[in-house]
Length: 198
View (cartoon, rainbow, N blue to C red):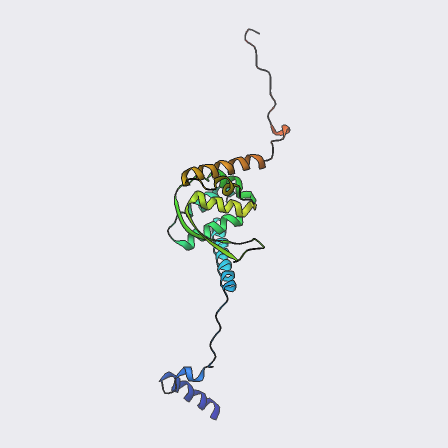
C-alpha cells in the first residue's frame, strides 16, 4: 500500500511543480547525432515518401504516365514534394529512361534537391544541389539511374541555355544508341507497289 502512495505523491509533486522533473532526470547530456546518421534518416524518409507517391499512382499505371506526373511535380514549390518526385523517378529505374529523355527539354524552375552519393570515394553520403530547371534535374536523375554522366559531360563550361540544349541532345543520342533495334520479324512485310497500267 505504501508504494502506490509514494508513486502518487511523486507524480503530484512533479505535476504541481514541487519537485522539478529535470531533478529526477539523468544529468548526462545526449550526444549529438552524427551527420552520416542524419543523412541516412533523410534518405529513408525520402525513399518512403517516393514509395508512397508511386503507390498512389497504382501498379497498373503505365510507366510513361508515371514519369509525366512525376516530372510535373518537380516544379512544385514545396521542396518535400519535389524531392519525393525526384526520388520516385530514380526508383523507377532503367525502364523509365526513354520516357524521361523524351520529356527532358523542360525549362520550368525546380530548386534544391538531394541525391544519394553512391561513389565509393564520396566525402558525404548525400549531395545537395541547386538545380535551376527541370532539364538540369532530369540530367542528374538520368545520370543516377544509368550510372553515366552523359549530359554533364556534354555541357561542361557553356552558357546555361546552350549547355541545356547539348545535354538534351546527348541524352537523346544515348537513348538512340541504347534502344534495341527492331527485329525484322516485327516489321510489316513490304509488298511491291502496283505499277500503273497493269
